[in-house]
Amino acid sequence: MKKLENKVAVVTGASKGIGAGIAKSLAAEGAAVVVNYASAKEGAEKVVADIVAAGGKAVAVQGDVSKAADVERLFTETKNTFGDVDVLVNNAGVYEFAAIEAITEEHFHKHFNTNVLGLLLVTQGAVKSFGERGGSIINISSTVTRITPPGSAVYTASKGAVDSITQVLSKELGPKGIRVNAINPGMVETEGAHTAGFIGSDFQKQVETQVPLGRIGQPDDISPIAVFLASDDSGWLTGETIIASGGMR
Image (cartoon, rainbow, N blue to C red; front, side):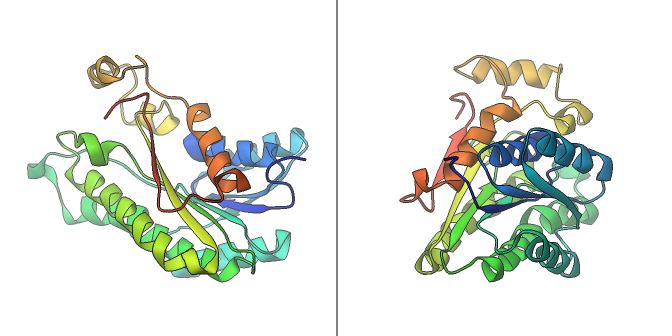
């Protein structure tokens, strides 16, 4: 029997990158997966098509995680399609680096609206949607909270909030049988990393010199950890932060 047979998972920001990899891996282990996206409809539909072609179950649902009405619709459609939720992966996020002189209100709110408020709103929706058997919440944070690179004040602050929220909610939701853990990836090669200009840059080379395993990550380095945290294999774990960075601290 597959590890996530008969479970329902919602993965936010799953149209590409780490989110897409996690959605496919959860589906491969038997979960019915809701592939959430904000604007990249084509990407989300491709992820669904890949899952279905491999024999899995998935549906794409649009929704801006920073908008309460969108989040409510996300879980209504999930309920109508697959039933109660068992697993939530809070993956939706944005990142832009900016020196202190360049930080604006827009820059700040862009990060905190999605990375923090969005995570809280979606978690609210999931808690209402979990059945009596509880569930697993997996927050995708970042190793920036440990390495604190220059120019990342706002992004690092938003992910620091994610780390703190993970700890708080693990205690708050534990009595309901809901586990809350975080994965903090190092630099991972995704579409977003390419768009940001990180891939092939001096920054990537600098990172790789500091990674004991000598390379940046791939989405497939992260998705098996999400499967573990979603499954009963991690049933005694909550409030944990798993640093997936090739050893970089």
